Length: 337
Image 1 (cartoon, rainbow, N blue to C red):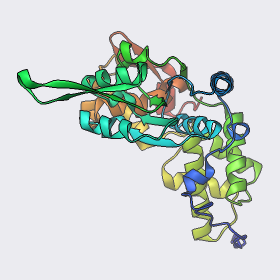
Image 2: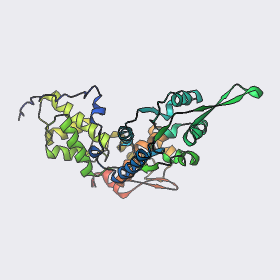
Image 3: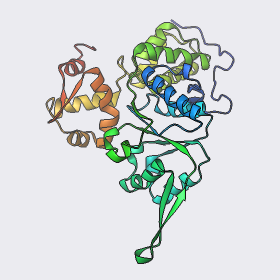
Image 4: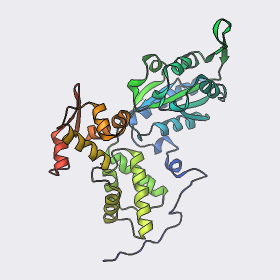
């Protein structure tokens, strides 16, 4: 049976907001708009308010957790609350001492410096960063051999906000420099993801029924970034087919995208099947698994495993990865949960 065509509402194809990209437009710009991570937010507000009362900047802050759970957004909120400039870079982009020196010496006073993937900094760069974080200066070595000399450059006051998905790879000395707090961000509850989706739907001017919000939330891998991306893909599917957004259309779109009711995709199932068939359910080392999947071990550990662990499909043991009974049931189709 044919379904009625969808008439686009004004601004339904929103792609920018005040000159921002769509992802930036959906990012919360106020603390009340940021859903979830209540304890982290409360601790941050104390650190920020205390610093403002002293007339200075808060101490350096580190966020860690799975990809897409709001680390970058919190860095933006910290800068907005302080009315401070935000300078963003990533650990992989800072390869040489000159890269770090160029960034630090060009900061405006009272800037929030956000370094994503901070675990990718080399140990040499970390060591250069220590005096900048502790005493506000940078030591630069000029020349080589007996004629080499060290020049101390004074830096403007700044707060470093680091973000990482692999906190264990940061050295102890670097972790100890984050006096403002080291905060773990975790996966979101279904209720929190639904709240985020309802807000995003309003900003996109989408009429998304309750059952659609619930279906997308269930497939979002408990991650706001995934939820918003899936909402936009379902919107695109409805616009291309000129059909209203409904539970049926959402299911059709997700089937096309290769996303099942739990949010697992082809690569997730490939991981589970490799562990089940090639390694007889484990235990299997992560490097052996990665080799069988033709993937990098970091990708396997950082991208595939966190959500599979949360679902209870996978266990990590001293001997390697083990497929649980719940994971076996998923593969055989006996049960989804």
